[in-house]
Length: 187
Image 1 (cartoon, rainbow, N blue to C red):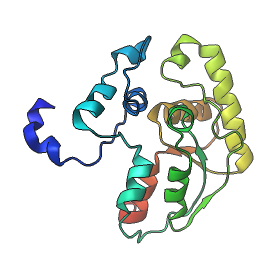
Image 2 (cartoon, rainbow, N blue to C red):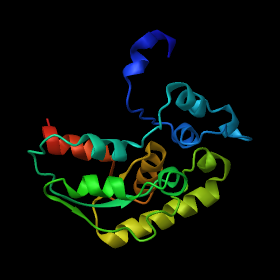
Image 3 (cartoon, rainbow, N blue to C red):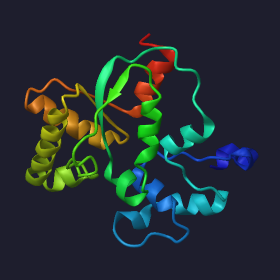
Image 4 (cartoon, rainbow, N blue to C red):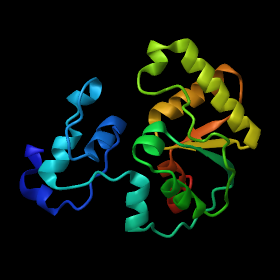
C-alpha cells in the first residue's frame, strides 16, 4: 500500500480475490481465532474507508461494456461457500451471466453446497472432500450443462479435478472468463 502513496485516496472500490480476507474485510471488527486472525483485510478496509466488494456486485454497479460476441454454451453456476454463506452474494453473478448473449443458464441443484475445496479442507480431509466433489459433479451432470461457472478458483480446481478423475467432459470457468469472451470474443 505504501508504494501507491496518495493514489489510494482516489479509490472508490476495492476488489479482493482472497475469499477469507474479502469476507473478513466486510466486517468493521477484527476477525479472531484460526487463520482469519492473521488476515489483514479488515485493517485495510478501516484504513481506506472502503467496503470490499465482490466482483459481481462491482461489475453490476459499474456496468458492462457492450457484449458483441455470443457465447454458445449451456452452463450452470456453483456458488462458492464464501460468497453465498459469508458474503450473501448469490444474485449478482447470475444477473451478470444472464446478460451474456447465447449463454443458456440452468439452475444447479444444491448450488450453494460445498464442493469440498474449502480452502485447505481438500488436503486435510481428502476422503470427505472427494465425496463432496463427487456429489457436486453429480448435480452438475444432472443439469446437462457442459460448462460450470464459479467465482472461486479453489472451487474451480476442485470441480475440474473431480471431472477429470471421473472422465467427465466439463469446462469450469470463472464468470470473468465468460464475460471477457462475450465482450472481446475468443481471440
